[in-house]
Image 1 (cartoon, rainbow, N blue to C red):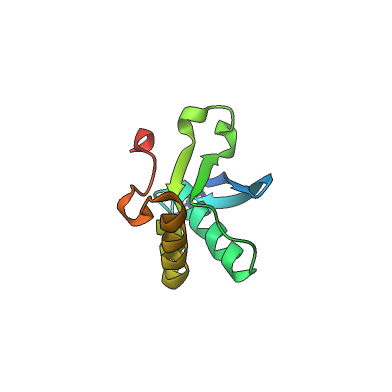
Image 2 (spheres, rainbow, N blue to C red):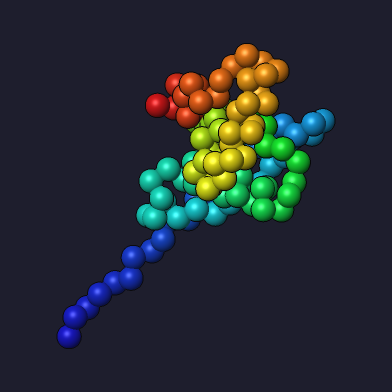
Length: 121
């Protein structure tokens, strides 16, 4: 008889924050770190996907992600370039629209910017 133990999952409660108009939006996602190497990026991708599918307002150019237990440790917060996150979510055309709009108002091309802040690399 084979004696196998079931591997326990390592669910990480991950928070996504973004500034929307005059408010700070926070959404929590439970991500299994045994399945996803980067739980913060996966949470940001799920946020973008849900946001777009629910036809919510525009996604800002930066999404901030952190593990819930690290909410007060700002060195562990990761800022993601939404252009790439929207592409990862499968919405290439929406990402290009956001890129062009942001470029026209800021003269910054999100496609040429890093996917996440350098501190977390």
